[in-house]
Image (cartoon, rainbow, N blue to C red):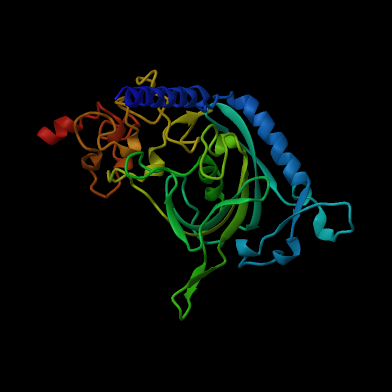
Length: 332
């Protein structure tokens, strides 16, 4: 009996020692939140280095109105003899674009392979898009892709669906949808004359401090894409297309930031996308001005467009004007 107690005591001590050892060795990964402006400088250097040292099979896409990202090949420039296609992406291919996002000046790059059907629609930043895509890191490793066309809500409603990373909302509105499609006997749908391109994103327009499968935090990324269709969103069903509910003003131009912005530190801030300051952006708020009347019922002209109704003639549509006299009109 005594021997059994001693053995049990030794076993408990061993287990306790091993458990403590594991706790001592365990480490918790904490991602430091970096300054966006400083990170952008690093990301720009990384992207410019990639663009300066890679080229693509340009001759396969010249005049091609039906380009496929599956045919697109990026090749690193070496010292060996190469073709005239070997001018770098930075020299003869990409467009350099800028945008202010999260109070930071960003520079990103776009390779336009085909703008899309000239008379086709371009998506608004808050619309749904039907696309095929492939995501790569700067080592040309694919971390995500779609074999078949897939539909995304670029902005999301923050509850049932979540939007794409910002670079999609900055780039896709400059392309157009496909001219049409042909359904093959096996059911596969082939789109033609569709918007096709590549976006080269700094981490601040991608996942920034977040890490996903195959992508570490603060990674600049590459996305190849084909744009087929777009669908206009009205997320709250109030009769106002979501993109028109971007009322944030930049340099005096309303709705110019292509995001839904709220100053949660100052909900009374009139220069954001939350008219009544209730903490809910207008595009998912049934009563944008907080006057107790749902936006859809402030369409007094009954033409299905509340944006052109201004009862008191002060230049502010009723659905954004809590003092529009509409309540009085309704009582009468």
